[in-house]
Amino acid sequence: MKGNMNNMMKQMQKMQKQMMKAQEELKDKSVEGTAGGGMVTVTVNGHKEVTDIVIKEEAVDPDDIDMLQDLVLAATNDALKKVDDLVNQDMGQFTKGMNLPGMF
Image (cartoon, rainbow, N blue to C red; front, side):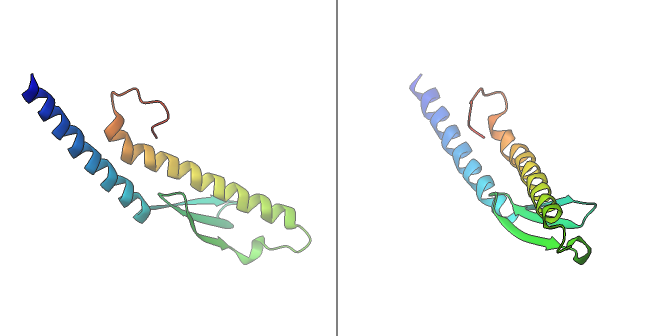
């Protein structure tokens, strides 16, 4: 019985190290969200940090700032949704079969 417990603890520690490594690697991964047919592109890394915003010149209309703000907002939300998908894909391997609410 004690041997099984020690083995289980070693497996948990190994999985924890793998999870930490996978979480750290997410910082090096990035996704792009776009809006307006590519008029605005927002790049976000796996830690949900915005790393780049590209706005095409055609999207800049001084008489319609609201549209530009909407495009930036939509592109950012698109990128954040893609990051959630990336995180679930990368980290989901550790939570398969476990019912851990609020884990990821």
